[in-house]
Image 1: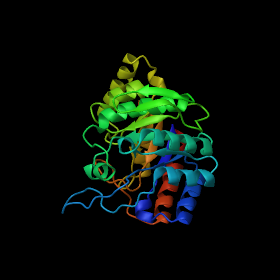
Image 2 (image 1 turned 120 degrees about the horizontal axis):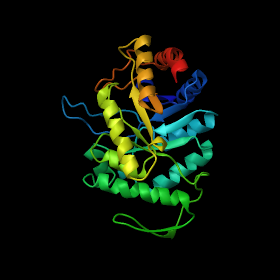
Image 3 (image 1 turned 180 degrees about the vertical axis):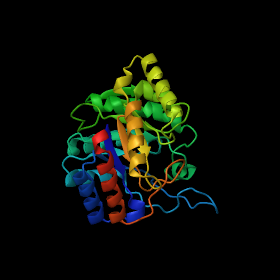
Length: 294
């Protein structure tokens, strides 16, 4: 099982030297991957609302391209890129370039988003975002595979055109975030993995993993080829709790676990500190506590 961390730049700021040093420290601590969230626009929330306002989000492709040049082993993921806000061929191109420049250290986590403000500001349709995302994944996978493609769909038309460069492996792993009822069928058909964060380590998680594996088999694919990345937090728990949870997820068949030190929703609780040193200290403690279980 791979262990990763979610970037905490809303706490720490995103200056170039801090971003670089944080990634280098995460790599030196022994983490396998670093994950970057995505928002293009921040909407001013209504009084009492929990929606983000002026949070700091580096563009994931720019951020991870920079960090790929600073590191040698660390892998990267978006967690998650809001795909239907963007032009499909452009995302395919950006992902392919990052894959090539990082030496294949990138997987593309995608989601459909939840904030209409962003879609309006980006001149995209909020109401068909799920359906469009299904076709988007198929278009990207075709563009990564062949030098030129012909594609005629409901939302895309490509006439004997392609991207260059393409990924060396002619594919980039596509991992889905989210918990909508249509998410699991989409993963079963087209995905390389799922990135849920709504489930604590309990029977409900085991049941939904079983459902995903059944759907994948029904789609004619090998469930073992579809990974599962769970999120964990450590703001109100101890080393003994961390070990118990990691052991549970490994037994459940999770392939990745992402430690979030700022996420503070559902059963997750953020850490108290907000400096880069605070976050790195927790990452060090967590890795030391669970490394032998991975």
